[in-house]
Length: 170
Image 1: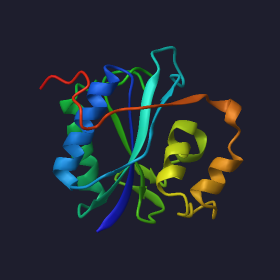
Image 2 (image 1 turned 30 degrees about the vertical axis):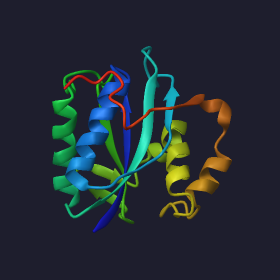
Image 3 (image 1 turned 135 degrees about the vertical axis):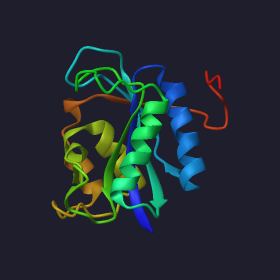
Image 4 (image 1 turned 90 degrees about the horizontal axis):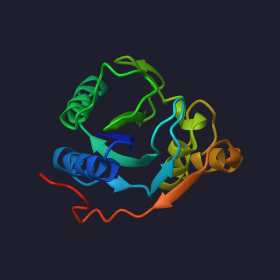
């Protein structure tokens, strides 16, 4: 089994879409470990704030199959693949780390470069895997967060009750 960290984000009906995603991930992979959820400004475009978190899952799927599963889940949540790269998202699920893989796999660079570029990825990752060492930078995620310039991106932790439907209508 591989240990995988997934970055999950949305800025369109975000609470409902993320809640559905978490439910679907639990159904497919079993238990998840979830970081706190953070609200952040859109990066690269003017748009509504995003909600982001990191989920830790154990998977038996290879990286290619995992990627197909995640894309299908995004599509089920109304992901528009024709939209510009920097635009609103109903759901975005990115593989951040897959065990200790380094390099390009199924079109993905691992570990994902956004880990050290965006606070909304690095902070929750540092909370869920504080002592894990970034394989290229040879520092723990906690160390990388401590070195991150906090003025680069503002984050606000928000509460989501995962046992409540909070705006979800199935």
